[in-house]
Amino acid sequence: MSEAIEFLLPAFMMCVVLAGIHVYMGMHVLKREVIFVDLALAQMAALGTTVAQYSASHAHGHGHAHMAVDDSAIMSFAFAALGAVLFAFAGTVRKYVAQEAVVGIVYAVSTAVMMLLLSKSPDGAEDMKRIFGGGLEITEWHNVTTSALIYGAVGAVLIFFRKQFHKLSWDPDGARADMKNAAIWDLAFYLLFAVVLTVSIQSAGVLLVFSFLIVPAVITQLFSDRILVRLFVGWSVGILAALFGLYLSWTGDYPAGASIITVFGILLLLAGTLRYLLRSRMRD
Image (cartoon, rainbow, N blue to C red; front, side):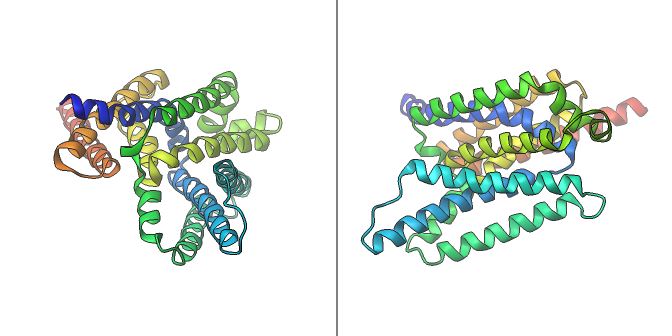
């Protein structure tokens, strides 16, 4: 048992760090009704990483140096930032084109381009598996520390400017009528989101990041409208899913990311059942 704890503790702490920022941002995403924006932005970040790796291998094949890790991270963020600009712009023209349509198109195209690039790689199948499923099992303590520092900086910005960001998410019509430069603030939110997702997919993968963002936000919305209550309960949901998911991964020899996502699904089902029973009891 001590061996399992020692091996999985960095992965668990990474999940705690992920929950810390993703639960809060997930409430914003859910309120904005752009549920799949995180999938699309994460996919754009993953495409950036793939492009960087493809360029490095191509250059190496012609006798040039490999692309550095920092260059890969910069490329990943650049693609995610491009997605942020597109989504922020889509929000300003939503009366003509549904923002979710833009999100879906960006996700589909970025996934297709990534598949084209990986099809030329001898390790393409493994790379695809890592991008979607993540590599939580091989998380190291320096990954946890780096992620915590970056998320902490983003969280500080979100808290300092919470009035503007909350207005945009919870009262978008009022924000555009009352706020100066509402579109700029909207872009700032998506850029911060891009920073978070660029870091997250390196350890967690696209699907697990989506689960940490959306599932706690949905569960807590079933029972409360108070942001602080939802935040603390959402953190508890994320930690609980990580604990049981990693336990399932260790005992059953399953991928950690897929195990945690499965537990998230079970918790959502239980929460939905509980909400239904409580509502039925109130009616009676």
